[in-house]
Length: 120
Length: 109
Image (cartoon, rainbow over all chains, first blue to last red; front, top):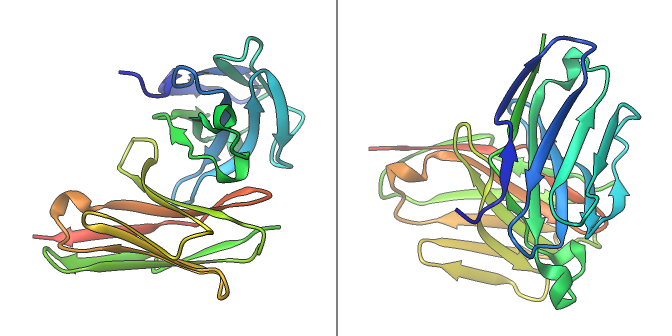
């Protein structure tokens, strides 16, 4: 399967613990995006990378959240001192358009299956 | 910031009938409008998209129309099948990537 992959698929943690999620984009896709989705809502944008550069961060990304993409391939999203309000599906997407000169605003994003986080 | 509204929130149709979902957006700078289908426990799957230089795009049973003047776009599914049952999201990309709240489509056999 050559789609976007995410690991783990499910994570249960206790309040106050740190968690880290991983996303592997489609091969050669140089843009990578993180979203959060709560039950019954659409995905909410958190941040995105072009290669290893983090180009945009939403105000939803509090200082407890940090994302990295050190080599421009896979990315990690870490949540420190988790709170019950962090319980959600965390989705990753990737896109190819930068190689074709497409702006991120017109670039087709392909989503992974998500990581469901439950904070007890 | 950008706001995307989506209607209806739920839609039930008989198999074989058509389904229409409508979205409106607020940011006139938005210029790319994808539609995603999401099944339970899975990530959103792109089904069709449209860019602001066209007014309509069709792919087999699925079509999308865009009215930039009115800032709205719609998804049309014809000859619906039970496997079309899912949650559908519209999105508007411009300065931000903003999704609508979703429409739960049920196709009744």
